[in-house]
Structure formats: C-alpha cells, structure tokens
Image (cartoon, rainbow, N blue to C red; front, side):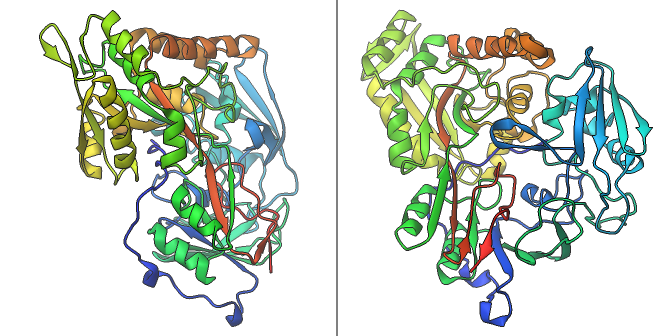
Amino acid sequence: MLTRRHLLALTTATPLFAMLPRISLADGHGDTLRVAIAGETGDLDLLQNVSTLSSYTIVFDGLIHYGPGGTLEPGLATAWAVAGDGLSISFDLREGVAFSDGTPFDADAAEWNLKRWMGVADFSWIGIADAYDSVVKDAPNKITVKLKRPVPAALLELTIVRPVRFLSPKAAAGQPIGTGPWIVESHDATKTVLVRNDACWGEKPAFGRLELLVVPDELARANALRAGDLDVIGGDWVAALSPRRAKALAGEGMTVVAEPGTATTILGYSPKSPMMQDKAVRDAIFLGIDRAAVAAVLFEGYADPTADIFPTTVPTAGKRHDVPSRDVAAAQAALTAGGWTGDASGWTKGGAALEIDFLVSDESFPGSRRIAEMIQGMLGEVGLKVNISSVDNATMHERRPAFQYDLTFFATYGAPYDPHGSLGASFVTASDTGPDGKIYIHPDLDVLVAKALETGGDAREGAMQAVYDWLYDNTAACPLVVTQRIWAVNPRVKGFALPVTDYDIPFKGITLG
C-alpha cells in the first residue's frame, strides 16, 4: 500500500549540501536538466513498492494518462469503451509504438503486463485488479478487459503510478524498459541518469539528458538551487519544498511556482478513544480551530483553508461547505449541549476531565509539531486540555494503526488516487492501510463508501455526496487546509510549468538557457 503524503516540511534541517555532486555547465552539461529527488529511484520495479514513485512516470506509460482536473487522456490506448453493464472495457492500442529495447507494444505485450498484477492478491486494493476476470486479445492492437463486477473508477485507476504502467516483456530482471520519453542510463544511491528516448511516440523533450540527484535534505536542495547545481526542486512526492523556504528563494531571484493542491491535511479521531466518540468534543475541535491562521502563519499562505475532505481539484469532490470562522463561544456551547460542564479553565463530564492526547511526529510529517502547538493553543482557549505526544517515525507507525491516540494528523493521497483511493483506504474498516491508519471508521460509513465506489453513471455523484454528507454531519473528521503544490526553479530554466500531479517529474515544455 501507499504511504500517506507528507505534510510540507516546515522545519530547518541540518545542511547536507556537501553530499550533492558538483555539476558544472561548463563541463558539457548545458543539455542536462538536474532535478532533486528526496530518495533514490531504485530499479523502478513496477510490482514492488521500493522505488521513488515520481520516477516511474518518465520511463513508463499507462493505457490512460491523468490530465488536468482529472480528465482522462490517451496514453498507450487511443480510445476506450466501457460496456453498458460495466463488466468489460475495450481498448484501442496505439499503433507503431515500441519499447526502448525495440520490442513492439501490441496486444501481446499489453496482455503480458496486465496479467502481472490484475487478479493478484497483492494488488486487490486496486478495484479493477480485485474484480479482474480475463483479458481478451481482439486484434493485434485491441484488447478487452473482462471484470467479475463493475468498477466505476476503473479508468481513473489506470492512471495511477504503479503497477499499471507497461514494461517490455523482454526486459531482464531489474531493467526499467518502457515506452516513455526517457531511458535510464544508470542509477545508484546518489543519482539516476536518463537520456532522451528519441523513438518515443509522444512529445520529445527539448534537452537530451535528465539527472535526478538524490538530496534528502531540504536546505541542501535550496542551497544547490541557489548555487546553480540544481535546476528544479519541489513537489510533495519528489523533493518537498516548504513554504518558508519557498518564500526565501522567491526573494533571492529564484522562480517559485505554486498552484492549488490536491491533498488535504486532516485531523483524525481515534475510533478507540471514548473521548473522540463524543460528537460534542469533535464539534468543539472543529469550531475551535482557525484554519485561515494555520494557512497564513504556518504555511506562509501556500495553503488554502478548507472544511471539506477533498478539494475541487479532485474529481467528484462534492459540494462545498463554507470554511468556519473560529468561534470559541460556539465550541463551548457544543460542549455544554453535549453534557459537559466547564469553561475556558477546563471541562468535565461524568467525573471525567476533557483531556486529549495529540500524537505527532516530525519525522513522519515534517512541521507537524509546530502545527500541533498552534492548535493546542487555540483549543486551550476553548478549555480543552491538549497534550502533545511527539514521537519518532517508528513509534508513529506503531501507534497510529493501533489507534493509540485521541487526535493525530492525516493527509489524503491526492491526484491521481483520489477520491476513490483515500475513501477506500482511510474510511473503510476492513481495508489494510498498514502504518497509514484510518482517518475515521464506522459501520454506517462502510456501507456508504462501498456503495459510492460501486455506483457508476449518473448516480455516482449522488452516492459520493452521501459519503461526504455523512462525514460532515457527524463531524467525523476535521479538514484543515489544502496544501499548495510548490516548486522552485533556477533562472536558466525556461518554460517551466507544474506537472499534472506531484507524482510526475517536470520536464515538458522546458528549455534550458
């Protein structure tokens, strides 16, 4: 399973600038775009979750690509058709395409790839894989995928990063051979070097080489950008750029590009906490937080306050709710209505004091401690006693799935996985999310999410809205902000535009000065 998106780093880290390989334009690298990545790419095995997710998309193509706003764009399939009963999907495959080793992409290659993950238990979290029945080769460049049951999100699922993309059937073990615009020339723990695939079917990059340099430390990445040793940094799933660092870089002549994001930062309540099962307490938390202040102060304006689970940048995100202004009196009134007695000095009910364990980990979610402290102060003025438990990454990964907390941070997966990805994983009791845990679970919610994920056609929007209404009416989660997508580029980079998702390495439209 995926690990949850990191919150944008808000803390200052120890410089690791000396670890970055020096690359001089004078040494013949004027045709090379140098992009920072936070972790090594590995061998890009499509069936193993061991490589940097963002690196897959420049080497491998899918049948369908994720376009702006969740539109579906042709990839290795030029057209597709879903049967009226939803039990089969036919694909017209792009003709004249070959993998970078010369192997033709055709119905045989497509069938070989699809059978590597469809119907395989390890990939049952993907609806189309879980419902898979068979693949039929209708013609040399046409296939039909048959399903045991309809999967309304099937086409959107085919846009995700892995395992749905296509590898050459003749590739040896560990060889990342795709049909995409870049070919891996070499990779190790410090960098991955790619060369342009001049035989690719799509738009060719304007430059010949791409180097993905492993720079785990954010300050080192920023310093390298300033020094001209990196051309591009940013992207939540590539090498996150914090709002504070982005502000500094913008003031130093670097180009900073930010756009509305697709992932929501959310406060989630433990389903095993008696305190959090009291809706009055959840209402008080929801009303007692100043989301606009969190966005402005802690995210430097690079976030948008929200009261909804998904932003409008995600398909079928549901109707919008007004972002509530912080209202201490209303929060206290909610507690009083729920049978609590007290005031700004504290609250009790049935002899028990209202005291909340707030679990945070700066290792898991960089900057979460600062956000938690701000929220602690806000809720303290309501009279809620909030104790922050600051733990390391390993402890977070143990305590969160065991629900050993009252309150903690979560984030939705973002494009191209949402809304079905986060709904099916974070709000369903039976799904296995490993260390990610659950934002909220309830038997009634299980039924609603199952129906929403199984409903297609014109009824789908209403079924999805029923989930959002239930979550909102029950104050089942506390959305805070939608973090913006932030990138920074060196002035020699021209024509930079944000990639469609932060799982993509930016290179399209770029020229190098």
